[in-house]
Length: 139
Image 1 (cartoon, rainbow, N blue to C red):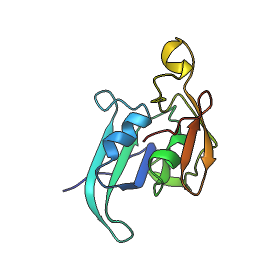
Image 2 (image 1 turned 30 degrees about the vertical axis):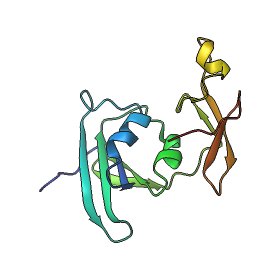
Image 3 (image 1 turned 90 degrees about the vertical axis):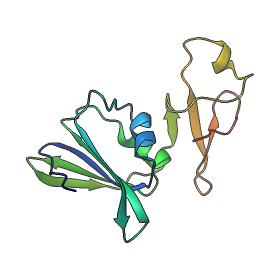
Image 4 (image 1 turned 45 degrees about the horizontal axis):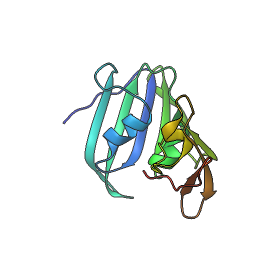
């Protein structure tokens, strides 16, 4: 299999095998309208198997959510066909509009227009809690 390099964009490497589509969903990337390549279940020395996501010509990608959804990921920023920077995403302190509260009694399920807001309750356990009802977030 041959996947060519990209000129300008983002390469998200070391994504847990089988979760590339979930990562795209969290990043709000529409696979039907975005130039991208998914490499799934590739051999990895560190993880055994991994997914790789290459997204070309992307302008407004919020990479903060990667620390939440893909904790082992590394991000390579590509310009002019060259990697110009590497980023290791960290757990974001806050998640706004990323996950939805599962508590049926939470105010966010009954009130329209309220943003889903979660805060990092425990970095060691990778635990986020709803700002409104303190329910734990699910990935």
